Image 1: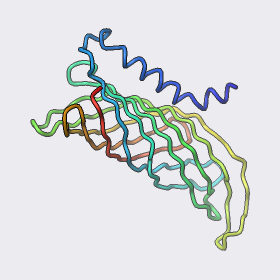
Image 2 (image 1 turned 90 degrees about the horizontal axis):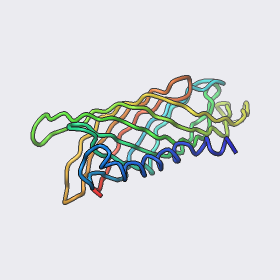
Image 3 (image 1 turned 120 degrees about the horizontal axis):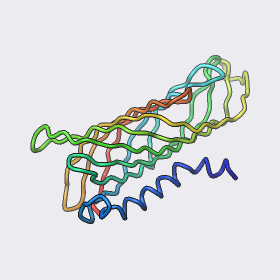
Image 4 (image 1 turned 30 degrees about the horizontal axis):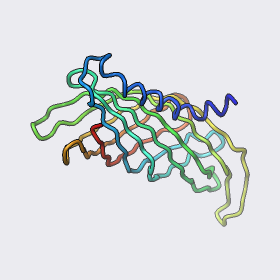
Length: 203
């Protein structure tokens, strides 16, 4: 039971923060309807720190990426992001091949940099919490024969994340943008970097 709750922790926390954001305007003194909700599509490279062999690397499309953002005080905002990715890593004699299922929640505080009237990027930093399942772990010879089969494993990690974001209003209440991020997890698990295009709606 506790493992089930822990594996769903990023999703549960994201839901809680989403509900909080929808009712927090009066608390921080902002007018209503300032939150933006959206989705992103991009790619990520996830580097695994493998305890039983060489560390594999692979890039993957991130098809599910949910975003919530809202103003905090003048020139700053929070940015919440939840994504889930599946990926496969090729095995060799020294590299442990495996499949991963990775769910991550990121929470940033972003600062707006007004470079010019038409270019106003955001720079952010925050924390990330993730749950990763590693399955079908094995090594294999150059001719494809199995050398060693390893047990499945899972990890729950906390990390530090930075990002850069720029967006534009494309029509009333609709925004499009680009983002890039880098994650540094505490402990020896995995690190990730990625880029994506996203769309937000001013609710």
